Image (cartoon, rainbow, N blue to C red; front, top):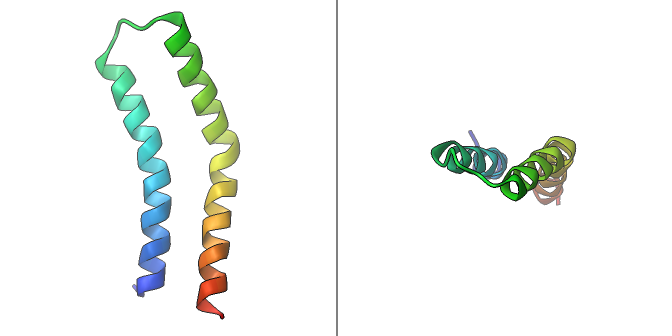
Length: 68
């Protein structure tokens, strides 16, 4: 795997692991307020709606760097 591909993969993994860490934190604390649940729901909604777009932007930036 080339260095550029590795960078792209690391960035995408970072995005995915952020969602996992949020989920794990919430699983460790079973007693949550309604406000925390609402925040988690909104974050999950944003990630689901925007994660693909963010990943595409990262990949596009890396491609531009490769073909400069």
